Image (tube, rainbow, N blue to C red; front, side, top):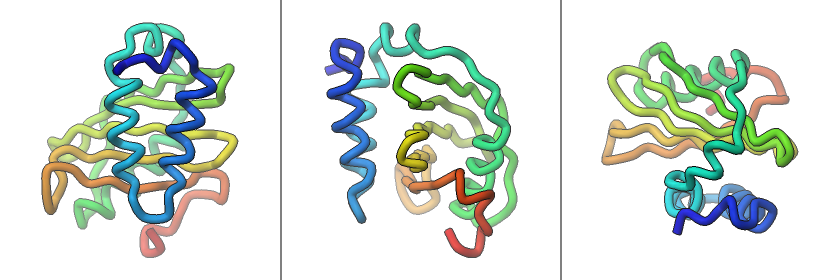
Length: 137
């Protein structure tokens, strides 16, 4: 557990393949929380990065989950540059938002805690095709 930094290519590959599963995103969520979230070396290897386009998309995804427009606040975006992997956290509507994004796959996952219908909501998102129309998410 919490060993992602011991072999970034392997663990990021596993995380990516689980995230790209067609329906079961929780496979990726569980792996991220087990292998990455508590890994201090992973956190130190990542650099703070300003990514307003990513924060905008997170706001759209969270707003859709909540059912009304909400703002993403206090976003902390970190970039594991060598592996083109972005991760971080924020707050929105009194909830915690965790996220990660693979630039090369143009795919990421957002976790909203607590969720609207349960303990957590999970949503996959994309950036490079432009800001999504919230009606299509």
